[in-house]
Length: 170
Image (cartoon, rainbow, N blue to C red; front, side, top):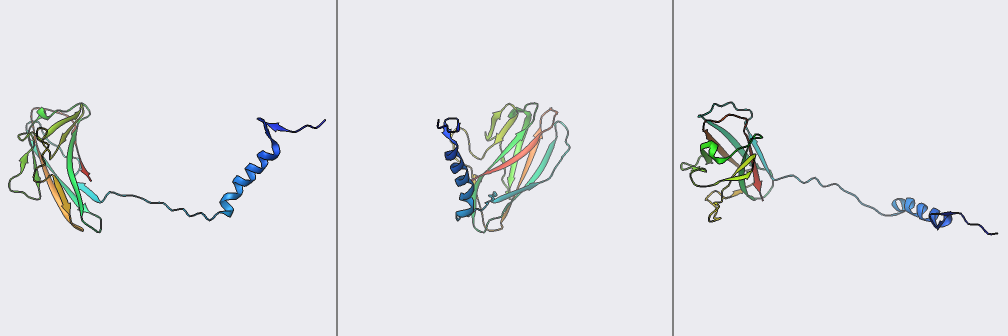
């Protein structure tokens, strides 16, 4: 009587051959491996933890620095977040001053404030009606160039914790 040892319907000799081959392949192959860490080219810095009162203006300054060794281009969006909910109607004005521009835009007045979700509004350089970019829509950063943006928030009679985020879309 000829008996063969079977595991899940596979003869044990075939299973051993597969395991030995799988273990030897990394040792006898010419394998190269590397890790690539991808970073965003623009670093954003700003001031933290600002105290303000209702019906008052407060400002924050953001600095954008090009870290790449070539020209970088991107569109900047700003987000205001309140975990208890936020709308554009909570502000008398939101003025965005880019690189000390003498004629800054009030994003509330020009219709550039959009409800992203219940807890987030987006300040965009593109209007909803025309989808045309403003003069500051696309920013070009030369090598090591820095741009600054001051965001001046004039709150209505509201209270809460508001967080400002900025994202550069490439």
